[in-house]
Amino acid sequence: MSNLGGYETAVRIIKQLGGPEKAAKYAVAAAGTLLVTGAAGYAGLQKGLVVVKKKLKSRSNPCPLRGKTFEVHTDAQDGKGLHFGAGDRFTVLECDADAILIVLNGNHENPHFVSGEFLTKISNFSLIDPGSDK
Image (cartoon, rainbow, N blue to C red; front, top):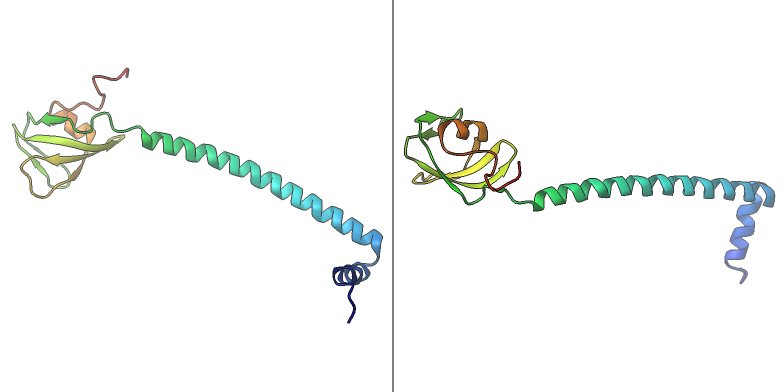
């Protein structure tokens, strides 16, 4: 057993590869592959971060209708069997596009997801917040 350690291992590997010239070619090819792979990974990571930032930003924008209460003016039933009577009131908990999470005041089986389009037809609810620029 010698005290050459890593040097002895390196010499053995270089001999198995066919000499210093071939070992250098393999090293350059490996370094190039790592460089290309790393650059592609970095570019993909940058694109992924942009997408994640956009998602986080959109999630940090709260529903402009959150906490507002609306009154039903027309008796109706949504497609899932939830009954709305004229004079009923509901409060918006959260919204995402046309999906509105509401609490129907006086109903013990809350909350409910209801279409914003449906709520617009039966109440004074509007998908566009009157305080917004839309």
